[in-house]
Amino acid sequence: MNIYEIPTIRQRLEGNRYPGRGILIGMTPDGKKAVAAYFIMGRSANSRNRVFTLRDGAVYTEPFDESKVEDPSLIIYAAVRRLGSRLIVTNGDQTDTVYDGLAAGKRFDEALESRCFEPDGPNWTPRISGLLTFAEGGFAYEMSILKSGDPEGSVCNRFCFRYAPKAGLGHFLHTYVRDGSPIPTFQGEPERVALRDDIDGMTEDIWNALDRENRISLYVQYTDLATGEAEYRLINKNA
Image (cartoon, rainbow, N blue to C red; front, side, top):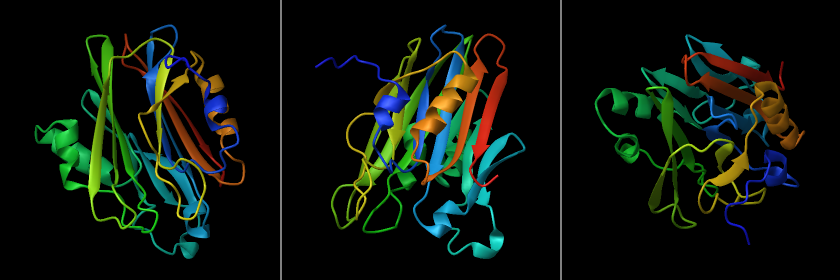
C-alpha cells in the first residue's frame, strides 16, 4: 500500500453514485496557482432545484425554480467568500460563521466551535469547510469536518487538518462515503487527489467524475500566487 499515492479525481469517484457535497483544495503541478473547488449533488427534488450564482465576489447556492422550493434552510447559502487575504469554502451557512469569526480575530477552528453537523437525522450530514490563507506569494490551507459521533446525533466530533501546499497535490473532503439509507458520513482524512495546471481540464475532470444523475453544480477557482489574480469556472446542470 502506497499511502503517498495521488489518484486522479476520476479514480477517487469512480463508481460512487453519491459522495454528496465536496471541497477540493491544493496547488497546481507548476506550483504557480492555488486551487479551490466546490461541488453539490442532490437526490431529492428540493436538493436538485439549485444553481450556483456569483454575486459581489461570492458564490451562492440559490433555487433554480423558486416555486418548487420546499425547505431552503440547508440548501441556500453562501458557499465561497473572500475576507482580505483569505478564501472560505464550505458546504453550508457556516461560511458566514467562519467569515465573522475570522473578522473577529478567531482561528479557523475556533470560528467553527459554535457549529455542528446538520440537523437532518438520520443522515446527520457533516459540515465540511476549507480556508486558504494567502501571503507573500504563497499560501497555506486548512480543512474541517464536523460530524456526528453516533447514529442518534447526540455528540459532535470536530476534526481540523492543516496543510503545507505541495505542487500537484490536492486534498478532497466530501460529506458522504457513498449512497445509502441513512447515508454514511465521510470517514478518515481528506483524500489525496492529483491536480492539473489547466483550469478547464481540471473543471472537466471533476464534473465528468460526478454521477450524471445526481450532480448539480460545480465551482472551480485558480488563484495566481504571484499576482493574486483569480480565475474561475462555474457549471450548473440547471442552466
